[in-house]
Image 1 (cartoon, rainbow, N blue to C red):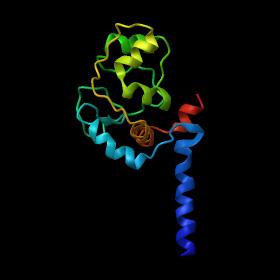
Image 2 (cartoon, one colour):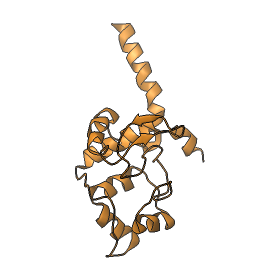
Image 3 (spheres, one colour):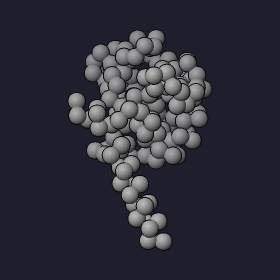
Length: 150
């Protein structure tokens, strides 16, 4: 029993760097389940083209979203999201959770533009679910430490 406890602690400590410094406060395992709501429009595909989650192409690939400038990947984003990215919007847990709760409202406030629009019509209103999805996306993305060092 003691061996099991030490082994479990070791695995927990090894996984901790991925979520260090507050990159993700949610539960990645729970987020993986919630992501089923997202994969109708979004995929997660690494830089080599390997599918982590095979999903739709209506929305952008969410691989490596942590600290990504909004509207900056090879995807046809809406004008308001591109504008937010040009104004400095980078994805982190706080901005992600606020955005997915109400994308149009978030962009309107961020851009200070009541006419802002979002191509994303889906809303993930439960903050804990959004935080869990964020934790999942960070957990399957590239190394967090590499981006933290930049």
